[in-house]
Image 1 (cartoon, one colour):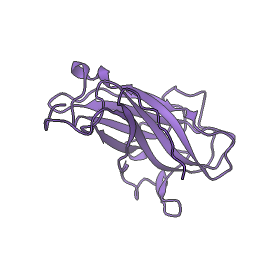
Image 2 (cartoon, helix red, strand yellow):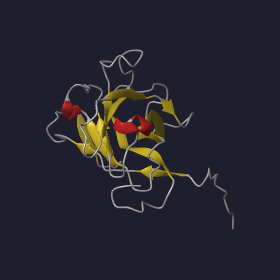
Image 3 (cartoon, one colour):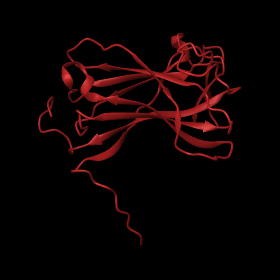
Length: 195
């Protein structure tokens, strides 16, 4: 039997926050977003527009009671990489949604750093995106059960200006999910609404 040692930083551990994607008008978006029943994901066409709400996938990440609320939250996308040469224009934006406060403004970002190199066509790639500083929330910190809204899609015509040009990948790309990594510094909270 082999045992693995994991680094522990002052009793703080990384964990996943995974939520189901919310897809608007999936059956009426004229081929922009479609089910990929074979691969259990969502196909995003090479003609999506970031300013069309029916072309984006939404996720809402609630801050669990175990999250270290004054640290960082890393977003990354899991997707089926068929084009092994070109990187799609993975665009996203995020905002804070704090309980009892006004909804924050959007911050755009791109998923642009692949975890794996030299993958064969059809392999699952992980690409990192925004590193969200939770201490930038209104009031300097989030509370338990506050949220981060995220929207993402392909920026096929570089409307955001974040990319070198138009999306170089032709055809559909299947996305499995976007999840966040957060630091865990407790098993939960001692109070229902406060940490």
